Structure formats: C-alpha cells, structure tokens
Image (tube, one colour):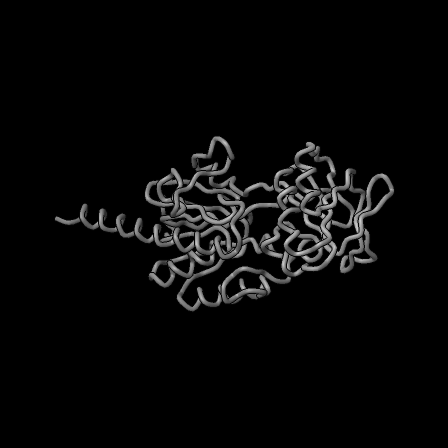
Length: 312
C-alpha cells in the first residue's frame, strides 16, 4: 500500500544530464528528488571543456554550482546508490543500498557509464590528468606536446584518435597494442605523419602520477610521450532501466530512448551517457533539459486525465 509521500519526479544520477533536468523541472514547480552516488565519471579531471561559458571549469565546481541553483528552486537531493526500482500502479518505488525507500510518479535515469581502463601500470592514476580519451575534451590542452595513442579493443576509435590528434601536435604515435592494421590503414596514417609502432604496452613511464615521460613496451623499448590517449571499452550503468523492462537497441545493446529521452516504459526517461556514450557534458545537459520538458508534459497530461475522471 502507498503510505509514503510520492514525489513528482525522481532523478537517479546527479551529473550534467540529471542536474539539468532537475533545474528545468524545479523551475516548473515540480517536486523533484535527485538521488546521486557522488561518483561522477569525470571526477578525476581538473577541468571540462566545450561547455559554452563554462569552458575550463572544474567539474566539481560545476556540480556544486548546479546543485545550489536547483536547491534555490526547491529541488531536493539524496546521497546514495539505488539498488532496485519497482513499478506500481501510478508510481515507482526506489530502494537505496542502505534500505531507504522513496516514491515518484516519473523517473529519469541518468546514471552514466563506466570506462573499463586497461590494466597497464601507471595508467589509472594518471587518468583524467595525463591520460585522456576525448580529443575534443583535452586535445587543445596538449597541443604541441608529444602524444601517444594506445590502441585497444575499440580499434576504430583508437585509429580515429590518432588522426584527430594530428591537429594538435606534429608528434603523434599510435602504439598498436593488439590492433592489427591492414596495409591501407597503416599507409593512410603514415601519410598523415602519424608514427605507427607495432607492439604491446607494458607500463607508463614517469616518476610520479603527476609526471609522464613515455610509454614502455613489452619489447623493452619505449615511446617518448608527454600525454597519452586511449579508447577504453565502456559499459552503461543501465541495470535499472533494463530491470524495468525498457527496450534495447539490437545492434548496440543500449537502452532505446527517443529524442526526448522517453523509453518504451511509460513514466521512465533516460538521458546522458547511459543511453548516449558519446555525449559530452554540454550535450548530456541538453538531453537532460529535453527530457525534463517531456516529463513535465507527461505529468500535465496525467493530472488532466485524473481531474477529468474525478469530475462529476
């Protein structure tokens, strides 16, 4: 039986998508609860790029500023991780790992994704500072430096990274690290003045996490580098969406959502990296805003239906 106050919207995930949605909805006078685990994907980074008027801003400061804005309009926050979500008649019930239960009429899930970093010694402690994955996010900051691209399972993206990074540096090296380049691929890269090194990476070279001088190879050789880029495999945190029965794309395996973030399950929306892995901070925020407008329209129609049904 529903004995708990039911919030209009519960947003799971307090990154750019979830916060943007929270701002739009709280300004629309909806009761909003944002549940956040406090583990943002870009947490290791000291700056974010490409966000108009916020270029170079510390991601942590961006989150703090957004939370203050939302709280100023009456939005609420709850720290914790959601263990499960249940669908009931007219509302959804979420249970946190600590046993806390909350209810909402609509759900927006913006739980992001996880980058599976290769187990290369020295890589994870430089992730977000000297090791990057997005040329658009960090290429400009390493312009003119010696850049090494470490290949991996996402081979097409690794090859593309090397090409994109030539705009920023005259010294770009692609270390195959398991990628088999066909003669045409190698020829195109070398014609673009990208040095190709065939071999597997053993470790990153540098006296401390704050320094990087090169990439060590299993052969004992080394590639001199001031910055490293990789394209790690990614896994969307979409367990809650799939648990609710949301349809997925047969090709990508990702949960399907329309242009406004609405999934196949009525009352459930998704936005940000959880459904669009390539989304940057600014595009994730835009997706959250679009989802919020869609959610508010859905709430309106639900209220109109209820009022009409209750009318004598």
